[in-house]
Image (cartoon, rainbow, N blue to C red; front, side, top):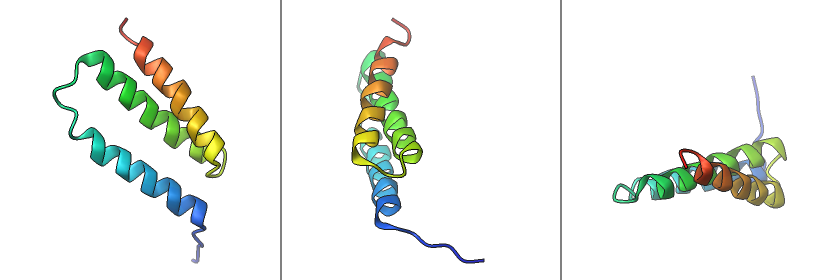
Length: 74
């Protein structure tokens, strides 16, 4: 079994890891801010996966996820 990692996949994984690590410092945030950040992170990961690591897809996913996360529990 062999597989190859291209730079877009590595960058996406690095972005996701950085986002998860930075969210661990957000314990004092209110619920809406935390939901916005989690939504943006999940959207960025989803956008990167769906668009094969495209920067525009990652940013678009983060924007949409952030909006959805902000609206949850409003």
